[in-house]
Image 1 (cartoon, helix red, strand yellow):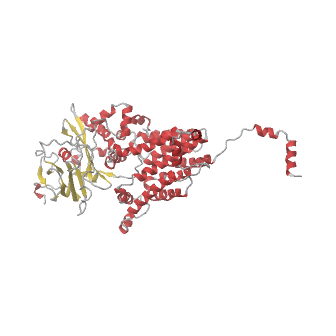
Image 2 (cartoon, one colour):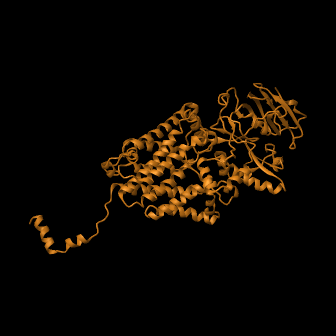
Image 3 (tube, one colour):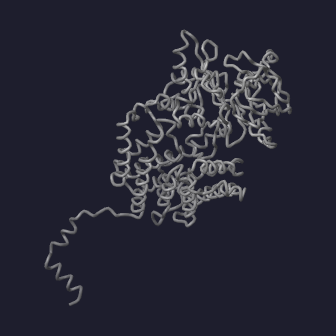
Length: 619
């Protein structure tokens, strides 16, 4: 009996079988895109569960009032939602962990996970890490993707996801086109610090550097090449191109060499995004081709019928390109020093800031006054290296807050406000101000003055706090203070001599403006040193004091290119002769050029010995 006859007999025996099949509701067709996105969803949220559990709650201590000073002006209200107690933190920690795992299957959980991820990133500046910011954005896009009804809508949001990754590689490569990265200095500082802290995975970076001095130039060049290669590959080449495998090399290196510092979340998540760049369907195209099609303005009837614009994915990508691009403009191309626009711009491990050289040489100092009199540091008598007229904020700030304050100076008015609250209680019926003396070294370079020492930061905070929400949001986008209250100096890095005078054993270069130095002299405490003035537009003075009251002081004049050896003194002031500048109308706030360069060597923090006078100064 033939197969055809057999089939006919079966239909005759069960005549209702065809009708039952016709009554069945057809199942939705599972496309290649659905399969790929499902696989990526599983990998991504497993990584998110790991990241949430091991990293999100290692930093912020929301119950600490100094931590609360790290909130953004435009999202201070989010602190009310932050977990303040140990019980709340425990619930938040495990809740986020299980939400990430549940997001593998339940679409509604993705929405909730995306919301709490955004909340964590926006609650405190101490929570801002480029990796976690990226994870929050990807979570939002995934939540939208799974709310789409049609395959065409889903494909548009796949391109939004692809575009988000392209943006990361675009700016990660663009910002690396600077001298400090290309000459290997940034890579050198990163990996040598890893070895010093014991998080180098056993890689002997110091020994390798001694054997091959060009190793960090090679590492930096390789990072720049791979970032750039991945940008062009993911942006312009068709999905599934073999060049995408460079992602494995790049992030495999990061996972091995940096995981003890940054964890595995970022390299694992970036490798997993390779799913997004697989071919989703037969007509799939590169991200650049999709953008070109979406942004073309052809007026032909035929083309308009074929093409549909997806406004929301385009707006998302527009914002993601615009936010990083604002950085050079809001900072007057001085973001290396001022850090304006630095957040949300994918400047990953690009610039390291430091304000502390050694004991007695810490150049981030808060200086409150009460009725125009300096605030006496109550801890000054506890050690020879304490500044006598500073607020000892270092003892109060959590470690992470201390680091972030140096990285993002726009938070300084909030710290100043906390100091104001403390000092004002002791300054009865008086006028309290809080200024700051801040010199910072970027990538191991010279120490430049960043902040106007005449600006009352506590007052600036009060003005900022009274603005409307729309004004706060606009200032946040520009990374600026209220109009007329700028406190970050302009023209940082304008000195032509600061970069090339470290030869001859000189260890430290300090760069300032004569108008600022006249108001706020450089202070060094109980450190022996050699000092030489390399450049100045006005004669400098050196004042050495032996007591806390500054009564036993000896003053001398420093001349250009005449090095002087100084034994340790309780407080050493490097300043300007104010009497000779009495007729000078220079303003520190309005200065736009650095005109003082000083270099130091033979630094030795030591206990100051009692001396009859300043005659021990050796020339």
